[in-house]
Length: 212
Image (cartoon, rainbow, N blue to C red; front, side, top):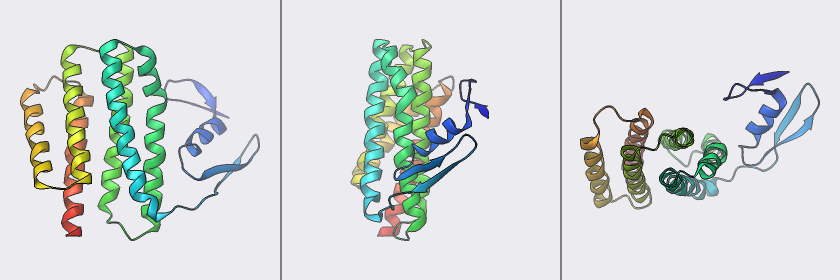
């Protein structure tokens, strides 16, 4: 049997299942026929890998934002195509892994689910901004707001790794500058990304309030 993918093309259901399993760290299809397949967790989740996996997700998003801006500025469709096709899969793989660790461990507060969800949503946003770039939507105003998003994301990473009052002040200053520039006619994906970043900051503050 077949089903339609995001682009409306008919592809085999088993191919879809394989692509989903590929997004999970430590999961493999161990048996497959023409009508069914069996997936199994072949390596256990390790709670002590949670923090390193979170940092890896954040780093992937940071470098992808850099590549997105460069690809947009240069009109490099090949670079944008690679972002659209592959980067979100890497983000999702480690987000799902972190979620699995959370589901099996009580060492982390449930608000981490919110933080991971926002990281995944930012990955989706970057993916579709890359698609728009491939379609020729690379106006200067959009490039400017993506550059500001990159700065704000850097602020969030800094706050996560070093939750200080100074880091929060820096984020709020850039958020205020960004919102002052926005007119309401911006690309909806940019607006969504700003909201996800604010959501991440709120989650980080709650996590650290609980820790302290």
